[in-house]
Length: 153
Image (cartoon, rainbow, N blue to C red; front, side, top):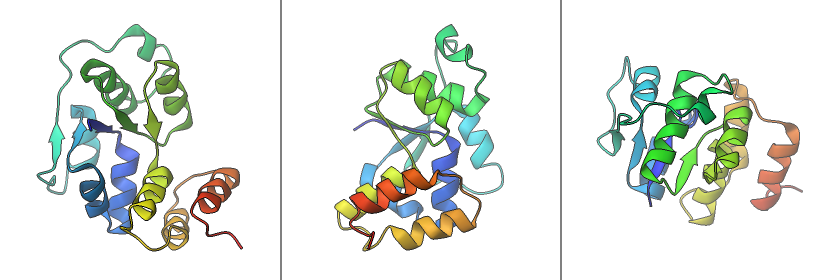
C-alpha cells in the first residue's frame, strides 16, 4: 500500500508518542519535501518515513484552493505516484483530495484502523489526549469515530 502523509497526522502521532502505529499499519510512509521541512526540522526522521520530492509542478487543480505548502505537496504527490491513501486532517485539503479522486483518512481514522487491527485497545483516551494538545476535530467526527470503535456508552 502506497501511503502519503501531510504534516498534521505525523505531528499528532508524535505528540501521542505513537509514531510506531503508523509504521505498524503502513510499514512505509512517503512525504513530500514541504512536509519534511515542517515536521522534521528539529528531530530525526524515522527510517520508514521516506522523503519523496515532487517531480512535476503542483497542478493548478490543487493550487486553486489556497492550501498550505504541505497540503499542496501531499495532495500533488498522492496524484503523481498514484497513492492508495493520503493521511490528512485539514478539512479543505481532504475535500480537495477527495474531489481529485484520492482516498483520504485522518489521524482519528488511523487510530480507528489501529484498534481494528488490535494494535491499540482503546481510541477514546488517545482522542482525548489529542484534543488536550489542541487537535481540532468536530464533536460529530469524534462521536462517529468513537461509535465505530464501540467506545460510546
